[in-house]
Image (cartoon, rainbow, N blue to C red; front, side, top):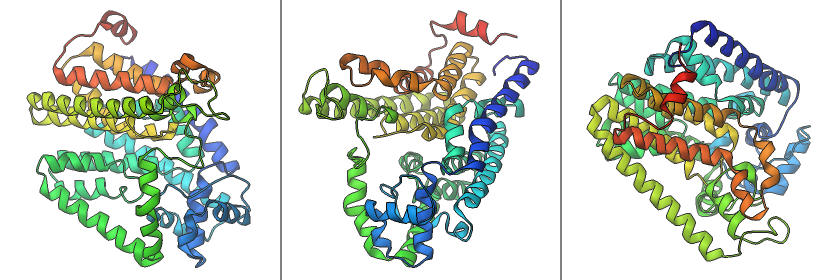
Amino acid sequence: MLSIKPAYLTILVCALVFYVVDKGVLPAFRTIDSDFPNYYVAAKIIREGNDPARLYDDGWFQQQIHASGIRQLGKFSPFPPATALVLLPLTGFSPLTALRIVTVLNLLMVAAAILLLARCCAFTLLESSAFVLLSGIGLVNCIRFGQLYIAVSLLMVLGFFLLERRQEAWAGACLALPVPFKYFPAVYLAYFGMKGKWKILLASAAVVLGIFGISVAFMGWQVHAQFFRSILPRHLQSDLSPADPFSVAFQSWDSLLRRLFVYDAARNPHPVVHAWGFYLALKAAIILCTTAAAGQGMRWAERNGNSGGQRLSIALLGIWGLLIAPATATYHFILLWLPVGCLLAYLRETGKAGWFCLSLSLYAGIGFVPYAAFRSLAGQGVLSLAAYPRLWLTCALFFVALAAAHGRKRCCFDPFLTSMYRR
C-alpha cells in the first residue's frame, strides 16, 4: 500500500473483491447461515408481541428460530435488549429476503467506509479499498452471517472523521450510536472523557440514554433488569454458557489460558496443568499489564502533537480492546478499520516505512490466516499455543503501535519488509 504500483494494487483489489463476493455476498443471497437468525428472530418476537423477558431463555428462543422456518442454531444471549430492535423494520419480509436486504446495506456501508478512510487517513481510493478488503475472512463472515459490525466500524470511522473536523457533538453521537447494541466503541468514549471532551461526552450520553429509553418503552424494564443483573456480568467474566469457553474459534486470552490450565473431562482433557487459580491470576495479570501498556503508550503518543498523538491513541485503544476481549470471532476484527487505519496514516506521515509495512502485513495476516489449519492443535497441552495465530498477530500489532508511540524509527524487519512494498 505504501509503495505498490497502482497496476498491482488494482489487481489486488479485483482479486479481493472476487473473494468477498464469492465467499460472502453470494452465500448470503442463497441461504441463511448462523448469527443472522439471532437478530431477525429477536426482532420478530418483539413485533409479534411475545414476552421480551423470554429473549434470554435459550431453549424457547431456539424454538422461535425453528418456528420462523430457519434451520440454524442460535440464541439471543449475550446481546443487550436493544439489539432486538435493530431489524424490526425487516420483520415483514421472509428471513432470506431480510438477509439479502442486510447484505446490500452492508455492501453500501463498506463503500462508505472506503470513502471515509480515504479522507481520514490520506489514502487514495485504491489504497483504501485494498485496506478495507484486506480484512478478508472477517469481512466475508460479517457479510455472510448478516452481522452488525460493518455498521459499527463505519460509525466509528465517521465519528473520527467528524472529530478531525472539530464537530465534536456529532462525533460523540456517531461513536455512541452502536454502544447500546455493541459496546466496543465505549473504549473511545472513555478516552475522550479522560481528555475532557465534554461535548463528545454529553452528546454520547444523550444518544445512549435515548436509545435505552426507546428500548425500555418497547420491551419493558424486566428484560433490561435481567440483562444487567445476570447476562452482562457473566459475559464480562467470560462465562459464555452455553457456548464452549474452550473454543479455539474465540482466539482470546481467556480461551487460551483455559486450554493451558483448566481441566474439563469432555472439552479439555489434556491441559498443560490443572491450576484454576493460576488461570485466574495470569488472566488478571495480562489484562492489567496490557492496560498499563496502553496507558503508557497513550502518554508517549501525547509527545507527537495533537493530530499524531490522537491517532496513535485511537490505534492503541482499538487494538487493546480486541486484545483483552473475553471472546472474539473473525468478524469482530472489522473493528480494526479505524485503529489500524490511524496507525498506518501516522506511520506514513512520519516516514516509518518498516513499521508501516509490518503493521499492514500483520493486519492482512489477521484477515487471511487459515485458522482451520491450526484447530487440531488445540487441547494438546503446550501445542495449544500454536492454535491461536490471530491472538499472536493482534499482540504483535499492539506492540507495533506501542513502538510507534514510543518513537522508534526503525524495526529489525526494515530491509525485508520495505523490499516487499518497493515500487
